[in-house]
Amino acid sequence: MSNAFLIDSISFAQKSESLQGKIAVSSLQRVQGDLASSEGEIEFRVQGRMDGRQRPNLTLSVSGQLILACQRCLADMAHLLNLKSELVLVASETQLPNLGDEDEDVDVVVASYKVNLLELLEDEIILALPLAPKHDYECINPENADGQSAPVHSPFSSG
Image (cartoon, rainbow, N blue to C red; front, top):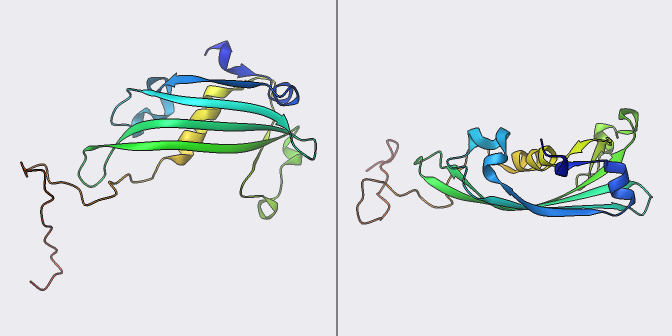
């Protein structure tokens, strides 16, 4: 684990620090089982700040492309990432909001003096992955040489 990705989350937010860069998709170990290819890079930015209520915050931005396998045709498909998450940091678990009191736009997490940003970014990517990735269009039958989609015969159709 690289020390470049370890931060003191409270200090990072209080000092309004920011960190940005690129990480190799191959370094996202917990995502590898969901990928068809581990090539490429993901861009990220982490910005610390204090909000209007003087609570420490981290804003995470992640963008890039992952290659997933379509669950219909098993062909590779691009999945674009353009994520932005707001994390409010609290000192202890007792300060976490009750389930009914949570704001859907903001996640509240317990602050730590050693936060691994790579793991935090990977968590956000995992949450953004589709459960069953599928092309947005009717998948192309690989047996069709001309690249046209093959008509699909339904056993429930009348014809």
